[in-house]
Image 1: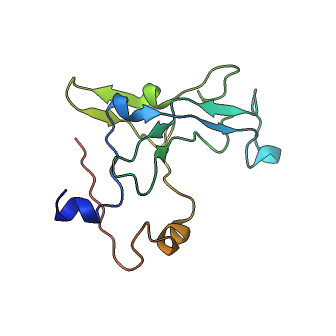
Image 2: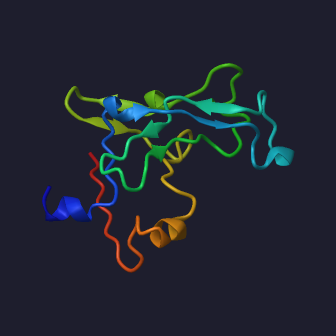
Length: 130
């Protein structure tokens, strides 16, 4: 491993071979304001592996309230595969701000910094998009 790899905290490759795991929530965090056909949500596969192994997987959680969206189904759901694209060589993930608002690595960046898993003073983010 080289200098840059040793300083890399997270690397997520969106090829489908790096997909796995599942994310489950029992009820919406805003249940009193959210009308859903089924209050539970399971996304599988939901995780994109962190190839560096420091920050952990990037997780597709679905919306806070799935009512009135394509996520609101009984017994089925969307997953990473619903948003995956490939040209046969490179993998990509569609993030449209409507059905897919993005992936989560952590809810608490401060905890990652305190654990030494993320820099506390400087950070550089590189994203390749086509």
